[in-house]
Image 1 (cartoon, rainbow, N blue to C red):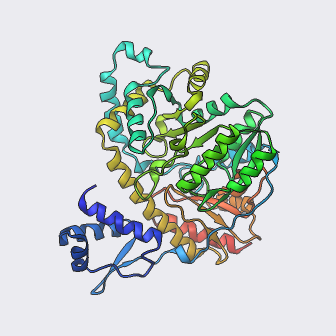
Image 2 (cartoon, one colour; image 1 turned 45 degrees about the vertical axis):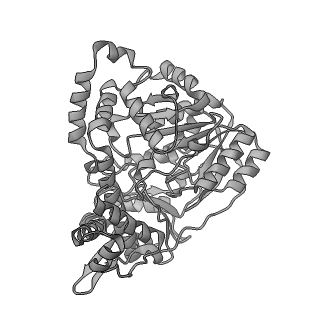
Image 3 (cartoon, rainbow, N blue to C red; image 1 turned 120 degrees about the vertical axis):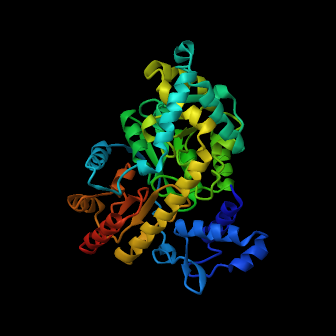
Length: 469
């Protein structure tokens, strides 16, 4: 980062942590110069950057202030604790109806699972594909199909190393997006009828995978900020023959919760004691507003129990479908299963991303992407505070592009979904995130699209629909 970017990030972290509250005045330019040992130009650049990110605003002849936001206007959702029990999964029809609502480009995509494609460097990626393909020899086109592009695997391993995780290249398996990686991991460690511990609420695709593989879900509550309830998980592992866990330890979808390092270490110790493998779904790792991805549970794995799955679909190239798994003791089994099913991800897509990671400025792109998403989160939170019922509760994740709303009990989110869709607005209703069809008064909204008048109007319309319940 440049000096002004480091200064801006330091102030942004103080705002996120609550040290600087909405309405607080920032130090004057002269004070900031003295306390940080930088020039006035650096301070101005930092403040302009924070303005662009929607975190501060300038008031004539008064200075710079932290923007008023919905941080203290809408409270955090409550955790509904229920006893963990086994559940057969049947959510696909409901999920397909939600996904079908996104086909019309005129629909406001609050229900989408992806950020706006306009936030990605698609033109630069196209140049990287051309460059990457020039480097491929005819032999490599075939030889690298199963193992994956060697340069791509090396670049991924380097990013692991930068995050404090050392692993051998042989442990990395390149897949057709993270969904294939997650599917392969689950198939390696379960058989039909087995029990799998998942989050509650859970990413709906995990429920669909369990449904397809005829597995039963054990739902473990997730705190909106702190993540998996480790006490409930410990009790479930003692009581039930759980064969695997599928968790998002950072920026969990749909809540955005992130476990602390201590909690991740405790989680790993618990699973190691019971010898239960963890499928760690970490596809949002690079979207942490603080910049550096959080340390994954994989970093504590000394026994090869953690299968850590990642992807470029959420941070760089949604349509390229390139993901991976660091498979631990299961890597060879995962690789063989991939060979028996899809054989290989797209060779040109792998070459493109490998070249981009080498020469395209990935970290610079990530900084811009995080800044855009953080500003858009603030805009959606502020709009929700203006338009939604005052009893509404909402998460405030430290990254990603989803907000989880808990509406008053009288709201039926499935009915809300239908009423909103009739007005050209999509959303993801709470019941698709639970094997038990819970969260009937909740919904997930995507703030990953640039905020504009259309977005504001959609939030106002949603507010009027909510008031009608």
